[in-house]
Image 1 (cartoon, helix red, strand yellow):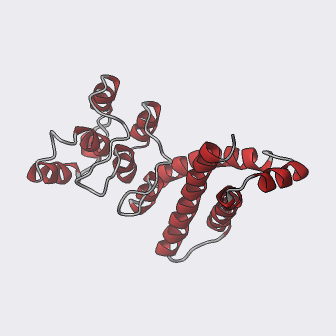
Image 2: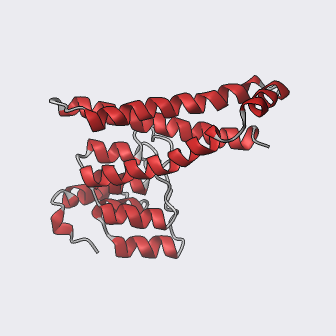
Length: 208
């Protein structure tokens, strides 16, 4: 278990939870923020809490987002192992777990989540790049009356390209303004997430 005194703001957050009467309602979210891996194992392994549970009292945020914002890399990995999805759509405040890590100034956690997204979305790129040959692709698109399938198919490619451009900028440029770099990283995460969302829709509605 992570030692709590490594994170001096834990007490403030716990007091906030108490004031809002959230300790019993959202125990997994507080455990994720605190890095309490022992409690997380108990709550998730015994199916007391869903690792993707959305905190309706706070922007529909997930436990993974809370752990990422606190920079608990081990806790982030544990939650993913227990079924938490790093590629969930942004919460109602507009932040993914990657975005939370970036906003919280947690570079190691952000890098891990970025690499996770690239690995997953990269595989999706390969699927779509190799999904059909040139002639087969033409037949496929002409054979579908639903124009949405064509739009979705090419939309995935566009979002992946936009995400790649942002990641390359982060790798190749030196930003004097940290806020500018954070904005580019958030854009990259957003476009990556959009590609994943569109890919799920394409697989469900068009691939068959």
